Length: 521
Image 1: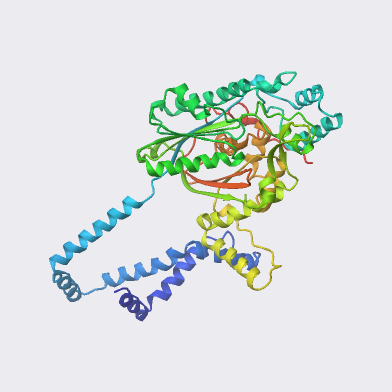
Image 2: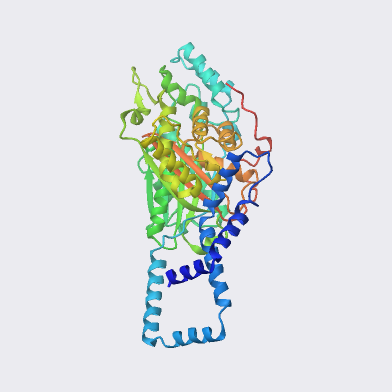
């Protein structure tokens, strides 16, 4: 039937004219300017982009228009013949086809993945008394007898170039002189961060502890027994059948791994709430040796955490902020250099610390490129995908020295939340993705205000965008997490409603002064 209709439309000569009309409607008005000043290359690229981004409409609209036109042009005799044809169909086949249609529709709706909504989230705001200025940092470093004076100066230079501001915070253990790490201090820090997060989230969402069906907690360095997830269950007297998980040792990308785990659980269990807690407890992990590759972590990592409430309940869609569209994980651990670039180990005198390799930036860029090859086809418009494919094919088949085409991800996302691991990390990823200063503003300002909060940094960045009052319905957000292993994880969210400013957010008392200029290196 489709072939017959198509041939009929071609014979009448309507299709070509309508295709030209649709192309003109989509291409000409959409171009920002068609005057002679615009270069031909730029205009042709714009036409190409709009054509492929609206390909389905361009192909189908003329066909439906011609079909409607032909029906309206039918004579009374032709309409009578069409009615007789329909009336002659056996009722048995009508019932059979109806049941088949209902069966297929049922299979489709039952096999659809459940939506994953982000109802709300909160970020930890450290108390003012825990703020650790550069001056205080240098004073404490100089008081530690184990530090070589030259390494104290080395840390000063790192801090000056790090992009951290004067309001970042460290836990009470780092404020004590002399520094005395202990498991008790780590537990106290965990309770301070996690309990305040959960209290704030429950108050904000009006959810009770016994409503939680799934609990996921991630903390890379501190993994006590009982676990941190057990600590939460005990504190809030959660149900005995709550499905709890505790992830450790997975680095700064673990926040999105926790979201992935919660998503998988929500695909299995109907009408459920999932609570995700992401933090890094650093009370016991202040390096006191003289290995410079381990001293860098002291200068970057700061206190922080985030709590996220997810659900698959469709009735929560009206108040949920975001819907999870995609989550892609890339693991480069098979490569020895990638595996060792962020490594917890002891130095020559037995003092443990986190080694940050000089190859870290290059490895992070490579992991991001590998992640892009997976997430790109899921989010990029067709025009960008074709250009990317042609670039890859050209380098493989024609000239390997061709400059690779970097897709324009600003056509897929309105906001970018890049892990605020350090100034160099942000700049490397911005260079790889060809992002402007405005597009990495949330990452830079998060690093300035809160420091490297490890796995929770993408949530501080999302909170920054919300605090600025920029988030609108339909906006798409790309969260990028990087961590030891080496791992690069991506989450794509779509905003479901305009998000108002929150007077109680971690950014509420300081958002007015941001963005601040970052001193060039």
